[in-house]
Length: 298
Image (cartoon, rainbow, N blue to C red; front, side, top):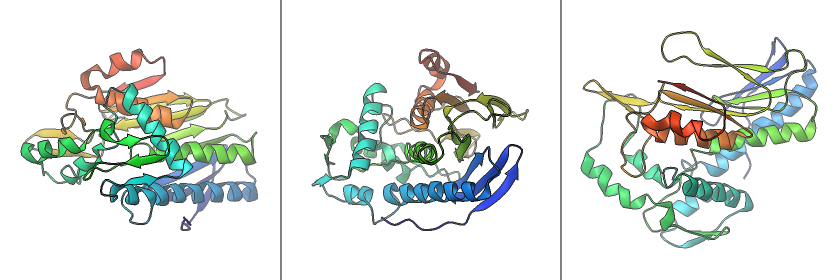
């Protein structure tokens, strides 16, 4: 599927050049430890086009891609591409490892939970009626062919942006293996290698308590944050965060405000951050058992 072109902005920063564009429903930025404008322009065009392609190919909001075909298959089997198969394999492993808490069929809950700044809370009856449509273990998936029970759907929103970050890193490494770069797609990051001048990338994590942003030193690998800073509903003094438990259909009410995780790649970091949020009040205990660096805000 051909991706559309998006405008690019290239500017200077302390270590070299930065490039900005819009994709994945938000701002994207790549920092390079280089002042070679032609090199940076060529690399970021490739990265931008890949991000837009992934957004186009795997968004559930379009009617011209494989996800749409699967979600409107009415119980019929659908053969998927190799790339989508790899994403579904990851989703399957995530479902198994999380004991069903990480479930890409839970997107049906967005019919009721909109987190759009309103105070609209769905009825318990409506949410309960949707729960039979949330169960990846009801999906027939053999690594190549998927068959969804009628009425169910898949939503790759929980892994698509992290996958795009990892793909961007791979493309930069293929073309400029020794070039330090930091990719940031809406707060999901990957450092291809540490910068030569200061040995680490300094990353700020927004403080939700009104204090200074937390500073994290990232040498190489992925960093992802899950939280409810901007997506929530507030009604009658109760704050409903956007992280939904697929077993109950309701927000996880005792979760941290945000969880940030560092891991070898962004997909893994994003999965662990989201899963920690889904563990609610036991997020810190869960993270301590994973042998990863993490930062939690309550």
